[in-house]
Image (tube, rainbow, N blue to C red; front, side, top):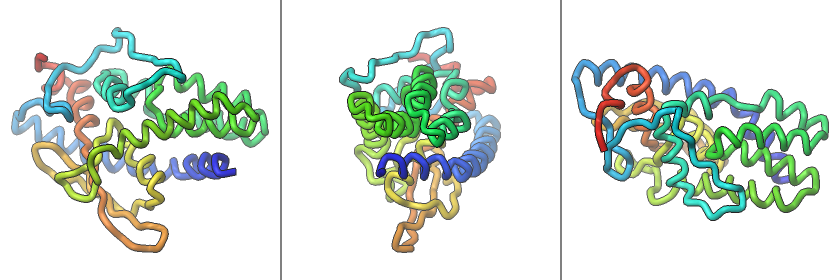
Length: 239
């Protein structure tokens, strides 16, 4: 039941995530315009290095679900791709959820698996796949996708606390902010972009007890891809 409830809760929240994505996209568009006017340099990778975005013709890594995986390295490999949005933005939920609710669990799992073949770093769809396999009584694939979901979420939250602009969680997409807040049982109240050399997304959140606080996310990957796809500086630097 825990996986079923979590899966349904995450899907219902996608409308909130869509609103968050729109607001952040508008803020990033503004940041892009300001950056173009200022002719600032390419944003570095979170590890401090710089480099070109990876062309869509380059085959992406696709580990087997039972492989040992460096989830952070895998997320960054996809974050650098010019075709990240084409691969990973959106959702198979409109096909997955009706199939799951119709109790066609193996078919629902297959829907999730098809999506994950193009975007294996989507933690929410690993959770959906785990839920479908669990309800189908298929323990082995359930455990594999539960492990991937946990590994990807832990990678988002690793190493920093997200409580200050100096210690933001590092996103590769807007959806990861929503996934992190869901995992922490926090509800988004409102958000804003903190302007600077590296834009930081500040989200006001409310916990289950009603207490309000702030969480901070590093949104540079969204901006890097936006720059690269619009002819900005993101495609001009060398390793």
